[in-house]
Image (tube, rainbow, N blue to C red):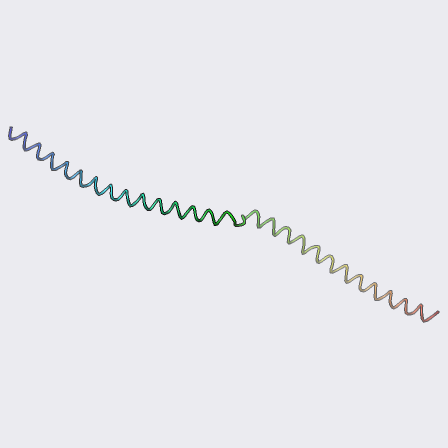
Length: 101
């Protein structure tokens, strides 16, 4: 009978050790759960900020549009230069023709 009681006490000690470990794990799990909740909140805030930002595809579209606008502007500047040259020549010819009249 004493042997059985001795074994039961050994098992009680083992159960106490296991219970202490479980309590430690519970506190660690609480810390992990709080950390996950904090990170989830941070990710939610980051997603909200990113919702209003342009994507890489949006930036590519903007750059392509700007390239087209710059091309049109360059073409217009060239045409203005040619028109100014032609206008100068026409003014000169008109002046010569008026002088001959």
